[in-house]
Figure 1 (spheres, rainbow, N blue to C red):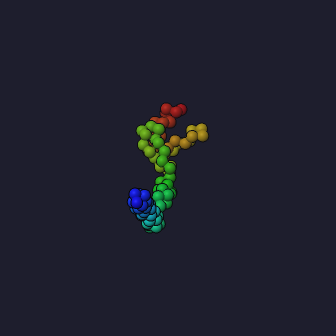
Figure 2 (cartoon, rainbow, N blue to C red):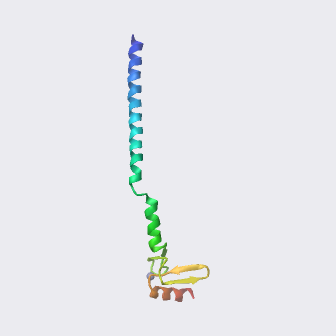
Length: 96
Ligand SMILES: [Zn+2]
């Protein structure tokens, strides 16, 4: 008789565990189904890169400048990007 009670308790525990697992699986399926509505992050990154190009650090004042800036200078195989013509001239004096 004691064994019967033990098995019944075990059965109840197993059923509750299975229930919680099934609930968690259903929840994750629900999240997965909702994902296509949200915009993917990679797309946003790509468009921002297309707009301004990569950012480069101005070696004089430390400002981050877009690759499309007019103030840039090649030195050997390295290209420097500047926020303004003043920064470019300053850097030219230092690196001469
Ligand atoms: Zn600068």
